[in-house]
Amino acid sequence: MSNQSKKADTLGASMRRFSPLVSSVFASALLVSLTILPVGATTGGVLHITVQNIESSNGFLNVNLYDSEEAFLEQPVERISVPAEQGETVITISGLPEGEYAFSVYHDDDADGKLDRGFLGIPKEGVGFSNDASFKIGPPDHDEAVIEVEDGAVVETTVSLNY
Ligand SMILES: [Ca+2]
Image 1 (tube, helix red, strand yellow):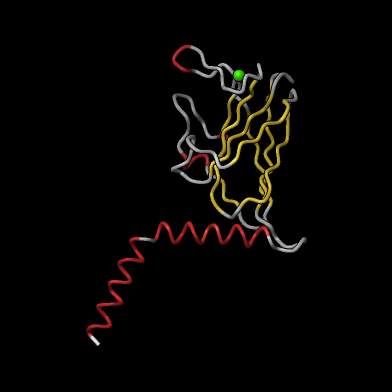
Image 2: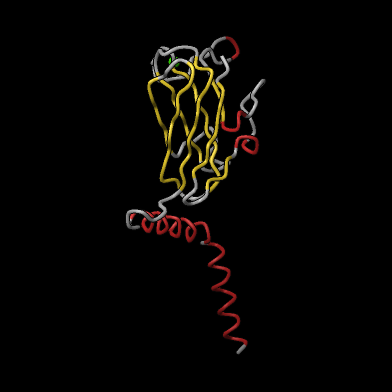
């Protein structure tokens, strides 16, 4: 009896040790199950991003989407680039696994594929973040930029570019 509970404890400890692996395997399984759902079933969430205050129709709007605080502004889960339109452009990202997302968007006016920066690294092209999170001195905290996306839900969000 005592032998068995010791075994269980050991198993519990090793499960805890491997929990990051277990959860990543689970996440992969979840992704696979989403892709084989029949048409008409919910296949993740949708993010409708309305980008406003676009100064010109030059170049592109580049969106980087992040799915965790650790990845925020470091490792995007998705990158989207669409032609810029003066005024307002709507970008739709669908098939998102349920979770917390944040994004950055910039107007790549000269279409060189990067955010141009000037003195002290201050952006020279229009920039915005999810929730219109403010970024006067540096980029916003993840907390301020986070958006909840639920399976089967369409989330409407608006961001205004700052030049
Ligand atoms: Ca650029």
